[in-house]
Length: 120
Image (tube, rainbow, N blue to C red; front, side):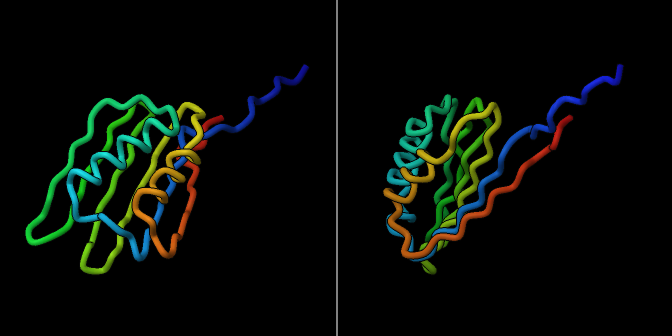
């Protein structure tokens, strides 16, 4: 009898969000609150949020979650934010994406989704 191969699964999903015309992306406090709320929205397990404010402007940082991370890099002078959500464990990132859209109110969004580490 031939052995059945298990279904191909991935180690995780990497979601890349480009927010154009984004608001409040130069406020360390607002970015921290927004990342925290996004993790709660998708019921991710938040471990730590670590952010850095650049001079004269811009914020970069990461919300470390048990499921992986949400990172952000902002260019306020262009009203642009690059956000990555990498999740494993089958959790749903859609509520986090919705929360981030609500927080930063981008005029245009480009979303790309990549499967990482296909496993068999």
